[in-house]
Length: 278
Ligand SMILES: C[S@@+](CC[C@H](N)C(=O)[O-])C[C@H]1O[C@@H](n2cnc3c(N)ncnc32)[C@H](O)[C@@H]1O
Image 1 (tube, rainbow, N blue to C red):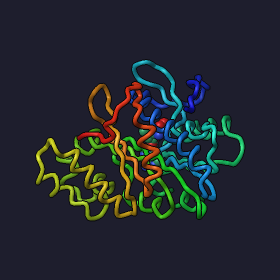
Image 2 (image 1 turned 180 degrees about the vertical axis):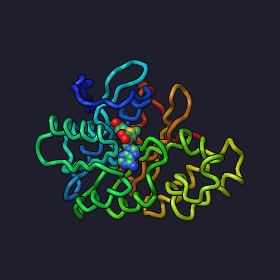
Image 3 (image 1 turned 45 degrees about the horizontal axis):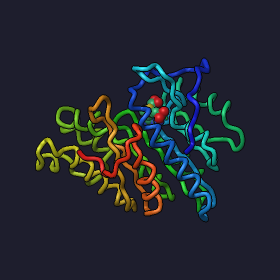
Image 4 (image 1 turned 135 degrees about the vertical axis):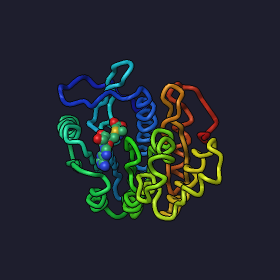
């Protein structure tokens, strides 16, 4: 399995520290990228692409330990079986600039696409660079409810497997009653997309079921984009649920790969419970 030596402080900008749970996120991503690039290289795709629309600065600092960890775009940039194309987008100017410089130091070969701006506006520029006949993996890791459903729709027009960080506990459940309910174009409405009547669905369920209701609604919406296989992983911060990682694909081959790599958890405990609860 592809391992990376932890990064050193390179003097470039590193954003505010993030929770230790970011290690878990990077663990699943690194393992899946390794399996994906290894196994899909031998399949008849014209090329393999990696898309990271909420890319960050490339290195993160962890809150409790102070350790540095590679961020998602630089994990993808250092995989032993390189992607044919890397496509990054970042909104925050300091992170964007640090990412640009870090990528230039690490990556030789084909020039990556690195965009500065709102992912929901730039996604068309990314999709335009994805060749027909290629296979892509999109890692979609917003801090809150910032990934519009319309953006998924643009990505889904190509053959793209998705790893989505859905901030259900972190944002949706925290804000649905008092922030989003009375606003028909709220972040939750934009993320779930047209026709997802989350207000009625939550009203019909007990509060304990709300996370499951949102997960079901979101997956039903994504199914309409042609996705047929869904896998889940719960991401906790100090035992509190934060995000639901949702893996979406149109093929059993990719879903099977995900199940295989995610069956070994970050704490190295083998588990056979493939579906996150709640
Ligand atoms: C959770 S962090 C990403 C971390 C990164 N994926 C990693 O694993 O290292 C989310 C990033 O998205 C950026 N961001 C927030 N809203 C955005 C938007 N609308 N478009 C693009 N980037 C955005 C933030 O500045 C932040 O760097």
